[in-house]
Amino acid sequence: MTALRYEVFVTPAISQSGSDTLNLPSGDPMVWSPIATTLIYGRHDAALVDPPFTTDTTREVLAWVEKFVRDITEIYVTHGHGDHWLGVPVLLERFPDAVVRATAGTRAHMAGLATAESRAEFWDALFPGRIPTAPVDVQVVGEEGHALIPVEVGHTDSDDTTVLWVPSLKLTVAGDVVYNGVHLALAEATGRGRDAWRQALGQVEALGAEFVVAGHKDPTRPDDPADIGRTRRYLDDMDRQLKSSTTPMEFFEGMTSLHPERINPGVLWVGALTLLSGDSAQ
Image 1 (cartoon, rainbow, N blue to C red):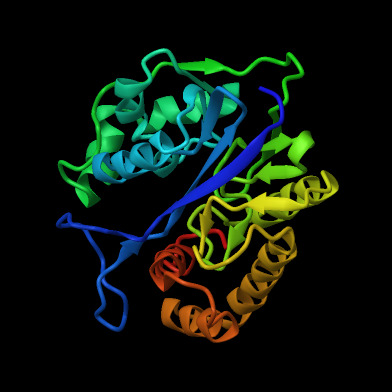
Image 2 (image 1 turned 60 degrees about the vertical axis):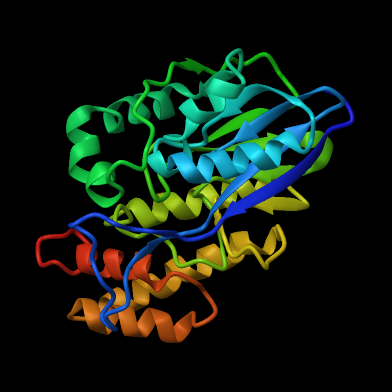
């Protein structure tokens, strides 16, 4: 692909419909954070990064992609969390020759989350009947020096995460390494995980991107590289709040007061319950 361009589709917050769905302390129902899917395209072909996970939302992305009249040849997955790839079978129905690529670490994480047991315990419990069930064949991305360069950054809100660096566009598709106007998913950010996340942010910062697409973003906000620093400050605030909080509610209220502009407090509430459950290594 030459003379590349990019566009972003943000899937709005997705309602949870399973019997295991939590409510916020206010009683409001939980929703899944908005998901950013990035299309990187040339004259004829395109790559799609991090499609969403339900059948309906992936069909919405597909309808958006069709407007560009490009052939999707690659689908890249930045990390193993299912909300960034479980909808792939819907895309492959339309683009059967597209190759799904990820790093070896991400592919292993995807395989673990795709088991029947894992799906039943989490994804199908929260979104019953709403997620494609077809298997996804994932090829490990090579080191051919393509225009789209995967960069492994380690642990952030999950293990073995990556970003996709596009030098010609000065674009970083940051997956869940960077959050933009959305509360961070903190359930896996225990112990030294937050220090690893900060190191990952440093790696992303060093790329010098002019555009940074966060995996979860407020659709009204630009793809601002300043969100790298904002994500770091959120983690710093989290450290301080954990030291001063003794209950999930105290932590939740402290973080929402510090970051009232961020959307989807539900994901913060899940993190609060996990981090202050009494048996978690904060």
